Image (cartoon, rainbow, N blue to C red; front, side, top):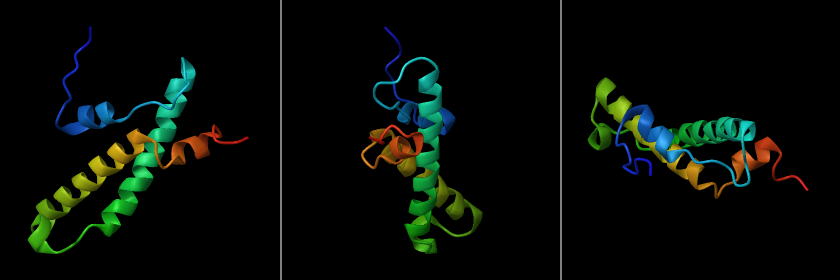
Length: 97
């Protein structure tokens, strides 16, 4: 059985959060991953603009901006991996009838 520990930082954390769209197999998983990464990036951008910019929240200067950006990326990846918004499904065409 594989390693079930969840990484807590960097690219490995984002990779652990990113799931796959239901019903995918083989090459379709790679495509679904790209759609989900797109959804995560879109959500991260929207969430970052919604997060407070005050220095009291994340600190001032570059470290504060980096913390704010990292939080937005992680939140975006988490929401995208859940799939409840369905942006990746819509972009991929899986939601078409």
